[in-house]
Image 1 (cartoon, rainbow, N blue to C red):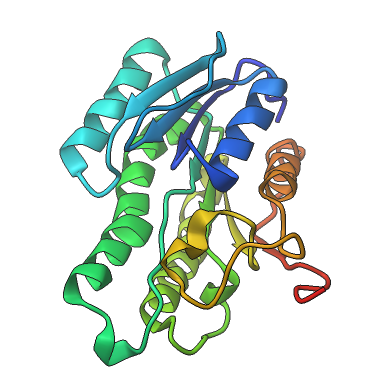
Image 2 (image 1 turned 135 degrees about the vertical axis):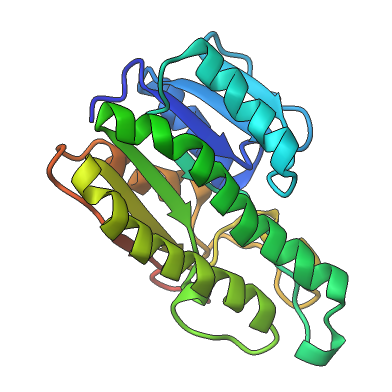
Length: 229
């Protein structure tokens, strides 16, 4: 897909992988709508910041209606918004459990539902779902987060089979540790330079988006080569 003038929506767009995707999409000439819970700092002719919480169906619906009232269709959706809490299962609060599932899974489902009809109608589109290595294998003291990312994996695998005949691609991305503020809730893990860089993960997402129409990256697993240096 040539990204010039393509309409892209990125959730969790104001930091980390989401922000890196926004910047690289803009460099490719895309028209980008960033969905954030707080203000966006990007100043660009082709960038539009939409304030919404992916956990809130009504606010997210208004954000997508804003896009579709201006453009006939959405070409790209990057479901990037997500968070994780660390700790033993019995110590995790119910609020943390629900916040992770509402953000990482339900919010992704909402956004996909809003974007998908216009993609199917035009017979072209690409949905990128950010899972994690924690969606491939379990890790101790991250059980709830793993559960959400396994859910993203299952949803993505089923969805790509559901929409491929409509010309819509679904790619699930499984990054290892990335140098972002994801680890702000961890007492033991701090971001460091041996982790993946957000801009490098974003570059691989752009590579998938630019692939030929009949070429489909279904799963993309990315890990740091020497995570501990």
